[in-house]
Length: 279
Image (cartoon, rainbow, N blue to C red; front, top):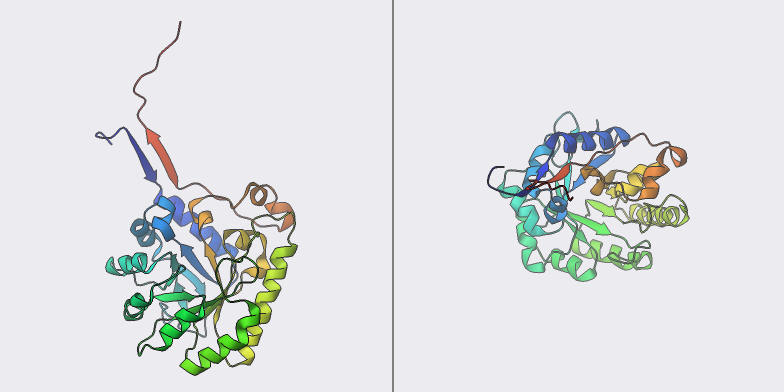
């Protein structure tokens, strides 16, 4: 770094170690999604993806899932914000399963289908637009269990099931997002959301939509609520060494006996140009 005065360094070994700790934390049969949205939170979208692409997320002996191998060892999933980020990963040779977590414009649905990129669907307009396509991208249905940001309300599910049946759409996954899982001091709201989510997935299964990948936990839920790990977890800030909250770090062993130690992957450095002693 001879030509710049300030720079950041990303420790790839730390990234891998953080990811490996989450892999050890989750049970067999649970996939790990590395959330690398918004340029991997400033750590570099492509660099982080290439560093983690060869990690295997779980052992599912009876399945050969999307992105998996004959042994059932599935590649890590990647979660991105937009179809633009997803397509960039495909251009860079990333073959892992990718889920777009944000909204995708109807005009770009075909690109997602062509590249095998899964999309989060949280409104009926998007569902109907996908239903018009001959070639369709994988779909993950988002349920609003209490975050009130994206997703279908549980009361809407009979209508959503009718639309899925009408358009012959079989979702690959179903997901939700916890509003306060990073605060272990009062787990009631998170557990209520999880209960609502389980009810919705059961309703979907009774309607013939079984076998979906269920995912609800982000970093906080993964660390603090083992019962929320389900079929996949979405780890973002924890991957880069950040605890979801001071409370999650200080109480992790007491509340849930979670054995995990995270280290920051990013260091911001500069040149000290001058040191003065003031008389």
